[in-house]
Image 1 (cartoon, rainbow, N blue to C red):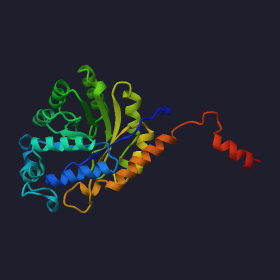
Image 2 (image 1 turned 180 degrees about the vertical axis):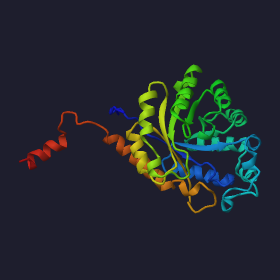
Image 3 (image 1 turned 90 degrees about the horizontal axis):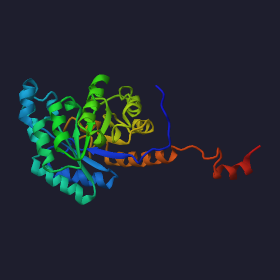
Image 4 (image 1 turned 30 degrees about the horizontal axis):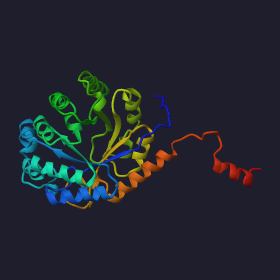
Amino acid sequence: MVIKMENNYKDAIVIADICCNHMGDFNYAKKMIKEAKEHGVDIVKFQKRDIQTWVNRKPELYNAPHPNPINSFGKTYKEHREFLEFSIEQQKELRDYCKKLGLLYSISAFDLESAKQIISIQPDVAKIPSASNMNYELIDYLCDNFDGEIHISFGMLNKEEVEKIIEYFCQKKRNEDLVIYACTSGYPVMPEDTCILEVADLKNKYNDKVKGIGFSGHHLNTAIDIGAYVLGAQYFERHFTLDRNLKGTDHKLSLLPDEFKKLKYDLADVKKSLTYKPDGLLAIEKKERTKLKW
């Protein structure tokens, strides 16, 4: 694979995925939004599930105890998910709070019923998570009924499945509103499994067809995100927490506010560095050349 290096990098967009790290506490969710804003985040993302849809689809999972009971908010996985689920009215209030603070609001729809609900509050971004990236009923509904940006993660897909999704968005004439994310679905993901050359592959194949290329990571640092930026990612989605020791399965693989701030600054610095010397010799070097050159 040949990676074409051009110095036309765009400003990185950093997304804080609050996911379930609000622990079902609405006021705590608003506190997390405020912290995200204060630490340089561009977009805050939440999630929406229709629990009964998932109970019907995966009864063996939802009717059983949580696989990690110490992190459970209910006796069964269904009760756990119900405890963590905000109503669409609460999501609207969170959207309005984001707008008040100057943040964009994104929300993942995990199923068709959730998609119908989220478009009623007109988020800035509708996200299709890796768990639902082959749910064409969901994809079709968003393409036909939501006018904003649609983001989709490509975790747990092979190359042919990725190509089919891109072709579908092109057929629906929604590809110019589409941001696609290289993603490994694992919690957490080790560095060797982040596979960020997938970013370059998506850029080489689809950059001219879609709005943007993203990287959704579940790893434990921010260094890999820098590599993904150099390879062509513009959107960076990471899980967000205020404390890794809190109850819940996602806190330990999430970034803290200061880490988000560092990621934003580091991506901006790397953007500045991704240039060629205009004439082979910079002004700063000419001065030093006079003083130091043999």
